[in-house]
Length: 126
Image 1 (cartoon, rainbow, N blue to C red):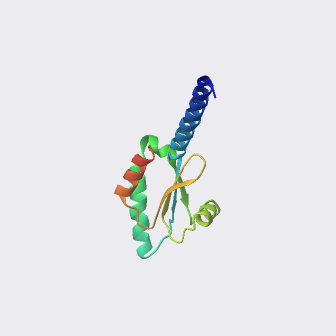
Image 2: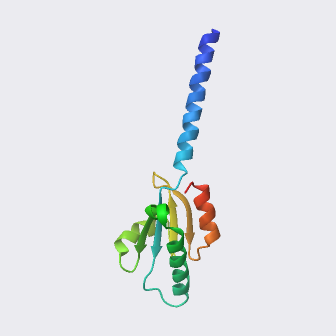
Image 3: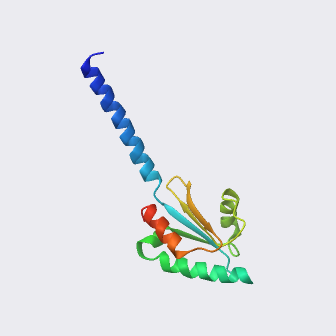
């Protein structure tokens, strides 16, 4: 095979690899954060819901606020049920990080730690 054709093939392969890497990097960025909470929680679950609500309110301010989709299971169950089914949530509150194609990047259920959220936001570019 002539050297010119090999060079063209190498360039084409490199272009495909670069495109794949850039596409994968864009897909792993957080596009939406879904927070499912309960306004009528009682007992010990009320404590974790209040703590998670405060953490989410503190974390998702300014530009990050546009990422957040807040759903209250007690007042908007229809909006929450698809997420509960798809991600098999058995406990609330839940914080779900999704990419632009709505693929799961990360999820926290029940007790949500500020350090975990900060690390994941940094990891996924927000």
